[in-house]
Amino acid sequence: MESGTSAETTSLENQFPQPASARGPALGTSHVVPMPAARPPAPAAAEGVELASPANDGLHVAIIADGNGRWATSRGLPRSAGHRAGAETARHIIEAAPRLGIHTLTLFALSSANWKRPVAEVNGILRLLHEYLLTEMEHSIEEGVRLSIIGRRDRVPATLRQTIADSESATAKGTRLHLRLAIDYSAREAIFQAACRFYKVTELSTESFSRVLAEVLHGGSTEVDLLIRTGGEQRLSDFLLWECAFAEFVFVRKAWPDFTVTDLEAALQEFAHRERTRGALPDALAG
Ligand code: FPP
Image: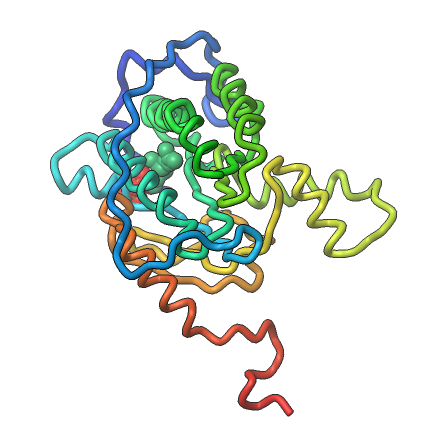
């Protein structure tokens, strides 16, 4: 997530604006969004896995999808190939999530810190996300997937901002899975923004703070049950700091493009064996 290279500077460089704070003066906003490719076929459902789980009765799984760049570099490919492969992995994981008992899935797609990367790389990721929203909108409606974007919206291109709004309103009735893509997201920044608004709130509680944070983020602020990070690193990288207070963490060595539905099932199995006490005594010791 944090690493970067300056190797991929292309003529696409000026297609998306960059935050002034990260890159100097903002670039122009005019850009071309390529027509989305046809939606690839979904992988077959894994055997022995329960189908469909009640929407409000499942887990919130958050994923730091790390290792795309290293995956590509180790194959002699440009980093962009790693992000494209990572987007494919995301499709498979999203498809499988509801039948594995996940009702909310939050994917860290672009951190606010990622603006420090080469412009071409960030633009490539933004294009992939735009492509994903365009190709998946109909399918998401059919599958009962509600799409939300959490993070800042003022620094992404206007056309992507519009597609985000369209996708969110078109899928708003989905109850099978709440898919939250974190784009230009920084937990610290979101908490700071929420704190700035909080002084107006009269009922001071952690719940009311969570509500203000949810407003700042647009896509809600729900407690994370399980946080998975691929790519071998073991840190939170400014992701869902407030929401992960009692989350269980599973770190996976594999790079994100190699992560499979079977790996997700294994992480869920591990999670199922963890005893979650939230500071209370474990059942065996409680009176
Ligand atoms: C981390 O790998 C990944 C990213 C910075 C963002 C890319 C995310 C995706 C392509 C998923 C997009 C999701 C959808 C739904 C389209 P890295 O570049 O930090 O890897 P490295 O640590 O090996 O350099």
